[in-house]
Length: 399
Image (cartoon, rainbow, N blue to C red; front, side, top):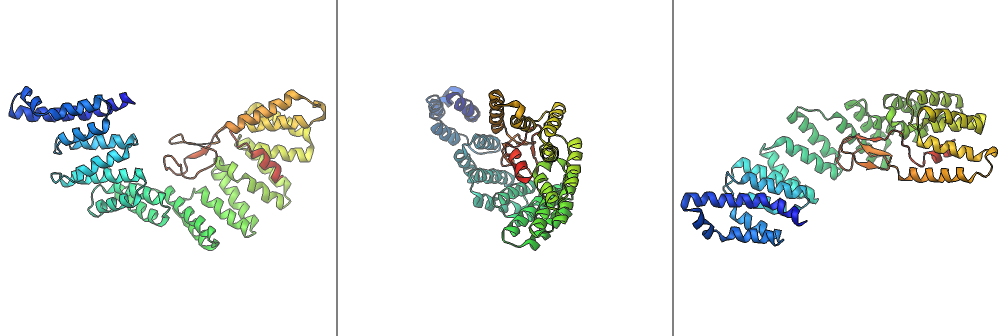
């Protein structure tokens, strides 16, 4: 920690010393300047004595704000914010803004930095006020809009998110259709929670209008159909989602199998699962198919299927289910080793992470449509070769 603070503050100390020396050169010799600037050495003394707060105050007092030092202040504030020292960053940026010598652009830059300090501290009202001030003055418009979107997402103000991101599209020349579709899905979820499925349907259709590939919207529409006992309509939507986004099949397969089962169409569900197992292995379909085979043809046939499957497509859930089936077979007797293997495999599965953000690497036990770490949308995917530990239980519950 001592070394980290030394590295952090040395640039500021150097800048302060340079500033003092440059002023000295214009007045008198370096020797007389050192004598005239004992404050600089006082700051170094604080730094070496592990008193960084006092050292910061001393150096900032020496480092007058002008065209030559503004970048040093901004860089230091940025550094503090990244390290989590947000209060120090706020103090530096507030000190900058209070200086009358700043140009309009320099002040705007300092205001933007201060707004980000407030955001990091969770003071969204203060941050929003500063950002709106910059927006009104047409300063740093694109980064201002991006930060406003982040604030409104944190506050779950989806209507404000939509309006702001549409403005961002115009200013940046970019498109954020995927993001907009998720905002509509969030608004639909709110409507569903309020018991208004019709309004929810409107939002979900708007989500698909702005981004046709929004599997989340399709899934939510199917859930409304199921809730309203329109199971065949729901099945059409779910099969469409499975076709367009097979990576999300583990999230919807239970509902697909359940609808087929409720309609008594076991041939249909088996055909669907056999097709998915061939086209998209390791998405959990092998467990459902194995259970159907077990029900229709017995444990031995299900064991044979899983054994052949995992030989070609290694799958931890498939292996666990295979061991479970073997444990139930009379020929195995009371094989303690097999039971121990099963218990060990379950422990391994419990420790595995099922989802990961493809952008920042954030790991999660369940699907998040928005990454809690980097705030990106639709970047968290289910890891290949990993299935949830309770998926086997899910299969048994459904079938």
